[in-house]
Length: 294
Image (cartoon, rainbow, N blue to C red; front, side, top):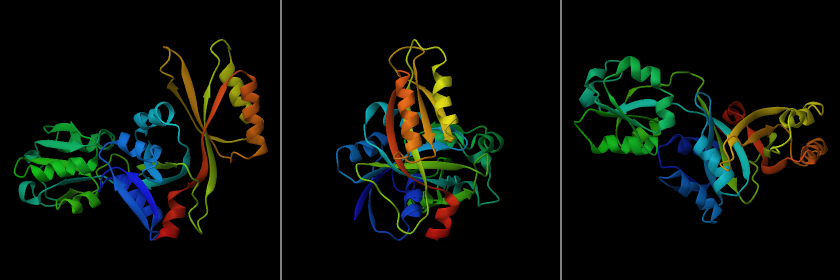
């Protein structure tokens, strides 16, 4: 049985893992801090760790991307997409029932900063008077609300989290956009392929340009373009070595043993660029998993 590290029970990460593996037996190891989730796989305490890396509304989860690049050297082995459905959670006895909530009674809203950012329009329009507090996870937010009965506290989080701590859903699907999805990756030492499921292939690379080469990025992109290799994502992040010095994170829709991709990487390195492979892995879309898991 595979052991998998992830954020606390009741988070979107928890929902996403249950959804990904379906009936396949796995042992889940929960941690409050994302650093501990990373280090569990690095230290060999678990087989894989679950890392949220990108969201439809907020884009990249910068802290997690920086951990993948700067703090650990462990490959991505699989990715999947899961809908981040956030709800307003509290006690009906304090503020009223769903559809008839007295939002003026809400004094504080707690959540993970990414989840909070996904619901800004709802918060501003319904409870502008509430104090906002960021915590380590949506599950931690819900647990805090459960411990502060009668104080007008609410949380933004999952229905799984509400059930876990015995609270009520006061308003469903409070994210600002309906198409709110999160991309997750499994990191670990061994490759993994879900049985009987179709997946596309993706390779994630990190490219650092030479500092004295004008037009280097254009030539890097050209190495992919003329070979008709599709980049689904390109993002710059600071190398943390010098102001104005960046690396480029790229997702290529091709597997690493492709002749074309290897030729492109060789051409990029010939320009004096440094190339690091972050992982080559199966990529599962939400629709494919929905058909196969449910």
